[in-house]
Length: 202
Image (cartoon, helix red, strand yellow):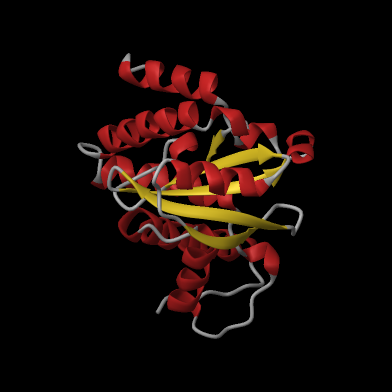
């Protein structure tokens, strides 16, 4: 285990980078969620030491480490995997157009890998309409809850579509005004990402 001294600025930067790097490996290799990966990295590197919050890397730093890890170890397969998931997400968003779908997460930001699922936000007046719609399509789903950015509980419908995991986070229609527009993309924006990726511009 690496020894770190936390009263030194350089050491704080070092441990933050170590945590981000190891968390990125868990995300890229195993599909771990960011929070889980960060906690595992801290545990593996530092055991049960108490940490100040400012020592931990933010998600943006971890995301950058994921990109670098994938470029080194999955550069020959990750782009095709990302394109496949984006194309599948586009098909789903067309199908779910009535519920104002937006793609989020790794499929949007370009870090999706072998273990990544598709995450879509839906915005509707009645969450039951989404469930009924899926049933009418013959899709068996499981219901769970995710915590939103404001701490609210979001009903989440999860299912397998063409051998890929899909999670629909169902928001109230009014949430369209509150959620971060920089962290989501509508179908038109996603199709632009797909076109740019196919042209090799990103």
